[in-house]
Length: 236
Ligand code: FES
Image 1 (cartoon, rainbow, N blue to C red):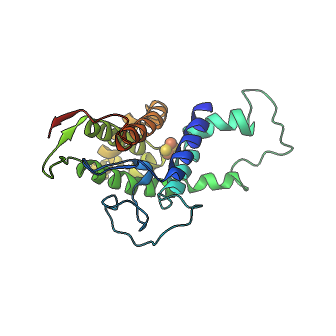
Image 2: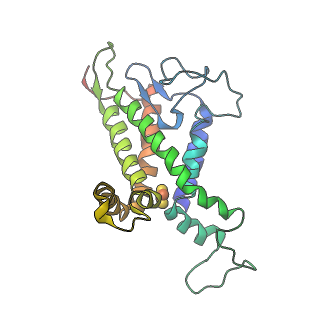
Image 3: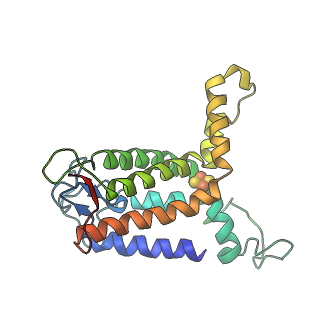
């Protein structure tokens, strides 16, 4: 629970910082600012155009994606387990009575929002595609040609693990193979469900690992962008 809280605080602080999120020489963009769709984004960082004008300080530059990222994490079955026990006390622990007068499960506000997890999953897939695109265009050298540095490895490790976390989602597993009466009649969905099921057994580990890689990726881009460190370059 503390880890999730630390992540939310870090992501919020960094999202409002509005600086050191883009490395112009190597085209590294931190995931917390992607997609950057405002005219306030630094030149080059808006891979998908700038349909929004300047934004008031109350809105972070990654405002399009952050609520969904946060929504996806907070409604994740794994994190639910953590904060139901630690914060919501529903239940506090096995065989321990709840402090709530009546148990309503996830049928009333605020917990009924948990049912939106499947829709957050759909957006998370789109975000993973965008992050993959960001990582692909980051093979950029300082002279404008192909380049490859430690930052590319950091970005790609993060993207691959984000895909693994997203595809290991319980909603994804249900979308892949749920409500099928006969697997034999749907061999492609069955194959996909089998792969997703294997990943699903590691969902907890992926949930924690990706919190770490998201922070590390952002932190690395911030250090390079602010010229606190230089990117280790292998090519150009
Ligand atoms: Fe964790 Fe869907 S259950 S992301």
